[in-house]
Length: 78
Image 1: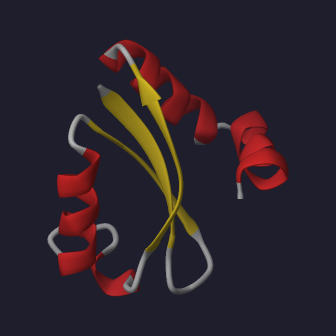
Image 2: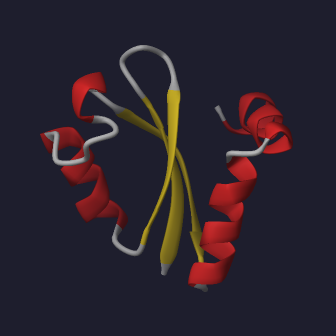
């Protein structure tokens, strides 16, 4: 499985990511091993979706980073 996820950071902002091992990736974020979220801990997993293909997971991550995806996230996901 492939996952697209959304984290809420301690400053109230959101981080969108992709992983093929969600548990391992969230653990890395929480331990400070991910540079982009290291100084914004603690983090909270607020949404994730599982996909059967990497292509679909990455496409959804890209969508969430777009302006329409931003609106969708705020209205429907978090």
